[in-house]
Length: 85
Image (cartoon, rainbow, N blue to C red; front, side):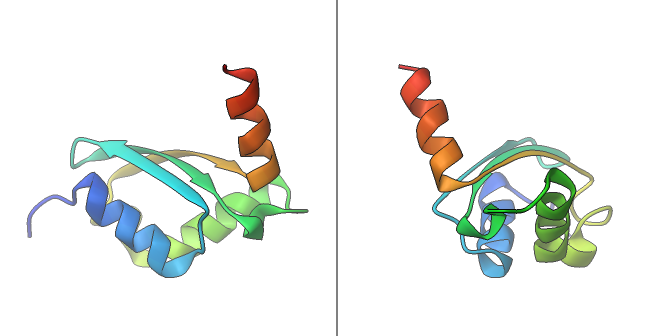
C-alpha cells in the first residue's frame, strides 16, 4: 500500500469530524494538521485530541505513522488569524 498523502489524511479527518477549516501538510509518513471544528467548543485539549484520534481510528500508528495537530474552535481560529494580520 502506498503512503498516505496529505489529501488522504484530510479526507480521513473530514469523514470522522465536521471541520470548518482543515489544513494538512506532510510527507507520507509524518503529518501536521490544523483542525478547526465546532466539536471542540467546551472541550479540553485532551478531549479534542481524543476526537481527532477517534476520527482516524486504526489508521493512527498504522497507515499514518505520525501526526501532530493543532485543534481550535472557530472562534479561536478567527482570533488567531485576526491577530496574525
